[in-house]
Image (cartoon, rainbow, N blue to C red; front, top):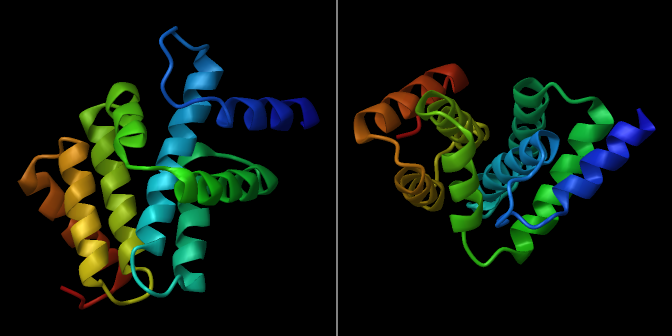
Length: 160
């Protein structure tokens, strides 16, 4: 377990864009980090980072990647740090575009919407960020709106 955790940390901190083909495990860890960073960005998009949003991100990472609790916490912490230092979203969205199918990216977008709706309110900033991320992930507008509707219904939110 300790070795696996050490491997996770070392590959998560590696650069997001490489010229050489990374090992399968390292590529998976980069996809995990890229996904987590986008979730953190949505969580931080409005003025309030609520405990509900944080728990939604933690739960989504645990469910999506089947990580142990300590691995999820470390991934979340690393995503927060990486998010603060990132100049833009391109490095993260390009990793997802290369590493995931259209269906997988759509599920990620739906999860991002769930994070946005977690506090029961969709702010203008969250909505604008989601529009940008949908475009960067090449999600067709109809699929994007469908993901938003499903996430809103799952959250039981009346937010627009």
